[in-house]
Length: 310
Image (cartoon, rainbow, N blue to C red):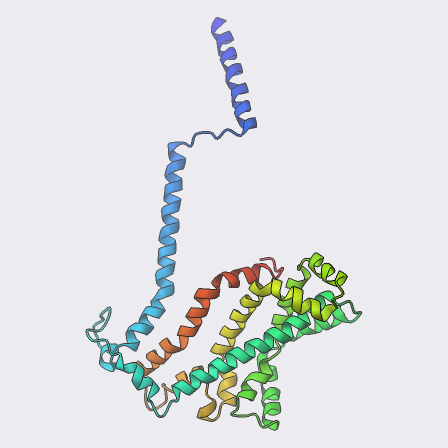
C-alpha cells in the first residue's frame, strides 16, 4: 500500500512539471535518434544540391569545352576533360566567317531584345495599370479578352501576321522582327495582378497633391515598382533573344539574321561546322548568363508579387 502511495506521489510531481515546461515553451532535449536523423537529412539535402548543380552546369561545360577544341578533339573516340591545346583562335574564326555574319547577328539580337523588351514593358505596364486602377465599365471585359488571347495557339496567328508584315514591306527588316511582338497579353496580365496589390495609400497621397492617373503612374507607381519591372524585363529579353521561328521566316536576308538563325546555319545538309557551332553557342548564351546572374533575385520576386498562388 505504501508503494502505491509513493508511486502516485511521484507521478503527481512529474506531471505538473512537464505541463509547466510545455506552458513556458521550454525546449525538450533532442534525443540521439532525432539528432542523427537531422544530420542525415542535412547531408541528403547537400548531396541533392551538389547533384543538381552538376546537372545544371554540365551543358555549359560541354559548350565551353567543345568551343575551345578542334574538330578532331570533339569527334575523338576517347574523352578528355579539356583538350591538350585550347584553340582560342576559334573566336577569331567565328567572327571572320564570311558565310555567317555572327557579329551582325549578335547586334540584331541585341536591338530586337532591347527594343522589344522596352516596348513590351511600356505597353503592358500601362495596360495593366489602366485595367487595375482606372474605373471603367468595360475594364473587366477588356481584361477577359486579353486573357482569352493567351489561349489562341501561336500557329493560328503566324500566317496572318506574316501576311501583314509582308504587305507593309517589313520582311528582312528589324521592324518586322520587333513591331509584331511589342504587346504581350501575358505581360499585361502580370502587370495587372501586380498593380492590384500595389499600396493605394501612395496613389491617394499623389491625388491629394493634384496628380492625375498619368503622372501618378510615372512619378509614384513606376519608381516604386522597379524590381517587378526588372523581373518582367529579364523574362521578356530572354524570350526575345531565344526566339527562332519568327526571325527565321522574317529574316530572309543575312543582314537581318538574329543569333539563333545564325546558329542554325552551321548545320546544313552538306556540312556540319562543329567547333564554330559550339563557339557561337558559347558567345550567344553569355548575355543570358549575365542577365540571370545579376537579375535572378528579381525573377523570383517578380513571380511572387504577381498575386499568382502556386
